[in-house]
Amino acid sequence: MSGGPWTGDDRDHNDGCHARWTASLNRSTGKPDYQDDWYDSQCGGCRFWVALSGEVGRDYGACTNSRSPFDGRVRFEHDGCDCFAAREDASFG
Image 1 (cartoon, rainbow, N blue to C red):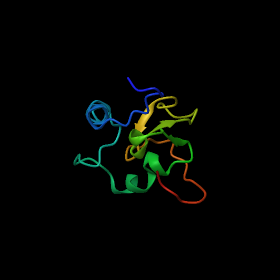
Image 2: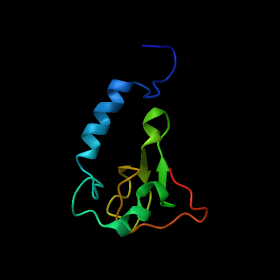
Image 3: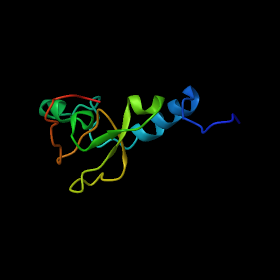
Image 4: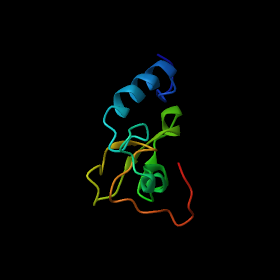
């Protein structure tokens, strides 16, 4: 163990997280029932999505929308839900 706090920047660990966490996607862009109108309402563009730190934060963040069923849960930036609220600056991720 190094002298400082662990930052999560471990490729094998992060790949494992990605595999586990994408198994619980609400809306997967790879599924045939994915609706085109969902594309512009992905978590990464929601004002209530807060990116995690470190390498894993490039793709994942926490939902902080009290109206969402995913409030307080880690979500993939390309997932989404019916409680999406666009960011005023239209940024993503």
